[in-house]
Amino acid sequence: MKETPWGPLPVADAHVHFFSRRFFTALAEQKKTTVDALEPVLGWSIPAEDPGQLAASWVQELDRHAVARAALIASVPGDQDSVIAAARRYPERFFAYMMVNPVGTGSADLQRILAGGQVNALCFFPAMHRYSIQDDRVAALLDVVAAQPGVIAFVHCGVLSVGVRKKLGLPSLFDMRYSNPIDLHAVALRYPQIHFVVPHFGAGYFREALMLCDLCPNVHLDTSSTNGWMRYAEGNLDLRTVFRRALDVVGPKRLLFGSDSSFFPRGWNAQIFDAQSKALYEIGVPAEVARAIFHDNLAQLFS
Image (cartoon, rainbow, N blue to C red; front, top):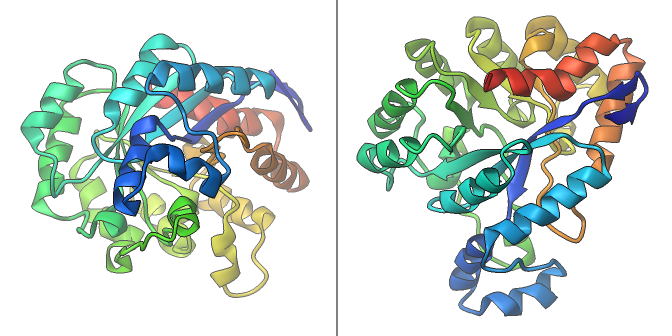
């Protein structure tokens, strides 16, 4: 249990990036350097080959902050083995999320991976990989997900900025034409049996994300990161206002707390939790709603 303004509450984090050795290897290849050469540039710890060691570090870190569970996101396509290994080693602590690029991932490959029953979510980044969420290749993957009860679809919308790429001087040739949550509307309606999660409150498309959730009861929002997108909004939008509107439109059962934590030595980003719990407490959210957002809603997605 974590100490909160409401007293002790369980906490589950719906958004943690699992920066495995393979993740850094992919960056090093793009940078045309070695993995070990990245460490002094980034000032981050580069993990060992064995993802179980990184998983153990995350368990220790979550224990330090009294966080019960976390969704680990494989942050490059093809790195699902890393998060699967972490979840297999600590099944009571982690959910395994794999990133897919429908342009290169076939439905047959996905069927084989999901058949193992150890992947909890597919993560789609349309702007990053430059495709529409309405593409037929996405539908082929969602057909596989729809046949696997308990597997959800995570769809990144809105502004997408990858800090590690900036630090390494790597270009981010993303395409925001594919960022609007409205594009997910027809897809979510077509697959009512799939739970969809849109992170960062829509990351700049807050109004559109609320419209989507209002029309599609199978769409959830995660609250992760600093939500710096608020500076694009009209008026003086702050976390308290964001939570008020989200609770009014989406309700308390479809909001998932996330920190967007990623690298060591920073580890789990407690400042995100502190800011969000403070905002929710200040708008008068009762303890049972806080518990739902900070823990129960994520657990129920996979119950």
